[in-house]
Picture 1 (spheres, rainbow, N blue to C red):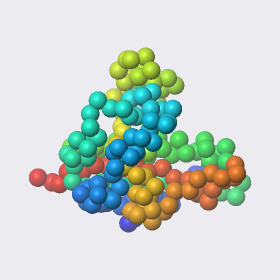
Picture 2 (cartoon, rainbow, N blue to C red):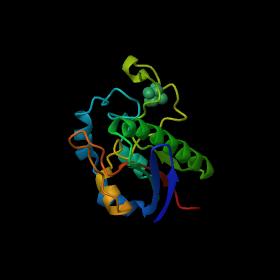
Picture 3 (cartoon, protein in one colour):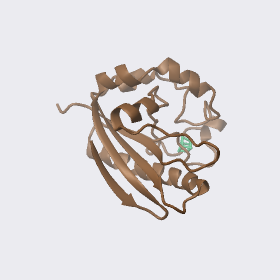
Length: 186
Ligand code: SF4
């Protein structure tokens, strides 16, 4: 597993990477019915094109690939960073991660990027109006939207458990986990 640190204004970003055979990942971390039930409780359910329910079976997507390269950005707050600052920084880093994954996708023919969360590119997702996605070339599904257990992924494959905000205080770190689905070279 690789890791590098990047200094930002008020926080540091630690980059974690690991590559996992997909068959192993599916056994350990993917359970579509279980996570679909959680999605149904989320306000984004049916409201973003990147979120469930889908008109396809997520297992069909997983089934087209052989490996998953996981890429996570861990945001470590500086001494003066408050919770609001961290909550502003997280989507910025999530977008940066998606840009990087889209670049990797272009460099690896047949690959598919998985974003670090649901798509928030537009203020109002066109799904709410029954219209097609405005930016299908940039919209990517997240691991959790396809039934992946991000908490377990982070602990087991990145050795960094997810932390939750408690009592409105800044956690020791916040993180976003994305990936790149890859096929074996022919
Ligand atoms: S790019 Fe816009 S329209 Fe497409 S899923 Fe994201 S928010 Fe919705």
